[in-house]
Image 1 (cartoon, rainbow, N blue to C red):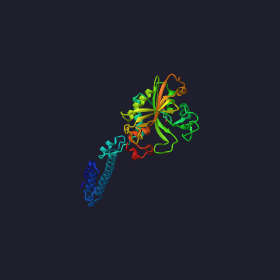
Image 2: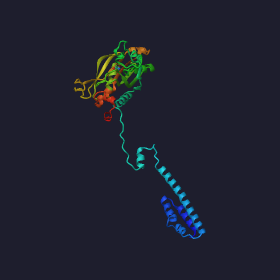
Image 3: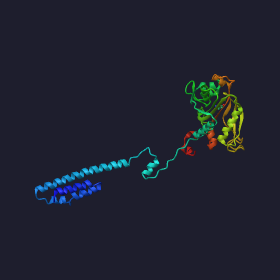
Image 4: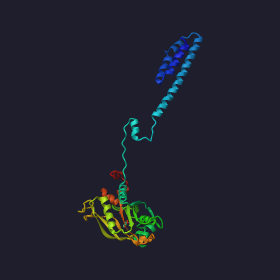
Length: 342
Ligand code: DAH
């Protein structure tokens, strides 16, 4: 057996092996117990051919080892690049590429207050109103003084309102947003402002120390109560259906004169009378009125130049009626079994 010829043949086989399995096959064939080389080594008689055969064995072993390293590295590279996940791909594509089913995910939903808030914004944007932000922490100047609350008014009491300082209070209504807008801009003003308000109320079915209001303000030349009523009629129909009617009851608010409480014909029974409307056919919907000239003076305008109207209503109350939600507590408990229904 010619050691050199054997080595050449073995090295060629090792070089040709493309997978670990092929390499193993070559190793067994040329280095295994029954390989020509091993058999020849067993029968070796002279020193010279022994050295030649051993040299061939070492060369082949080294080639196999090197080749094994190379194949293992190539295999690792291939695995790393094929198993790499591009996390920016849509989950659906990744699942398909990996040949597994896409687990359906439960989609979140908007809180009922948020849904109504957005509907209200849409309605007023459709009327050409601007949506403006207010401030949740207000000075007593904006929350009370500017709005005509006399110094003795019970709302000013720390027993009624949540103070965060001597002259700062968590706003008790969204109406202060009117003053900020009037200070920032001359008429025409058509704005709506939606947000949280705070009162020191004890929690029961219809009261909670935090809730949302939406506040509308329109100031222009020549606006009348007919504009107020027409606007509220439009908004109530947009919120509660085209059959709705609106009526006014006289009332008092420090920042409107005259002041009215609007009622909407009951959307549950259509006005015939039911438990929701306490069999009156009408539901109270908040407050409204013609902007008191005092407010124009407060921001330094001529009170004879403009007229305007304002209104304020509860978001949760609106959601209760539209979605059939009983009471105010579920709005703030964040019970997913409740929230998932909307
Ligand atoms: N801010 C009043 C409240 O919380 C509601 C209200 C009444 C708002 C009359 C107005 C308005 O803009 O003109 O009870």
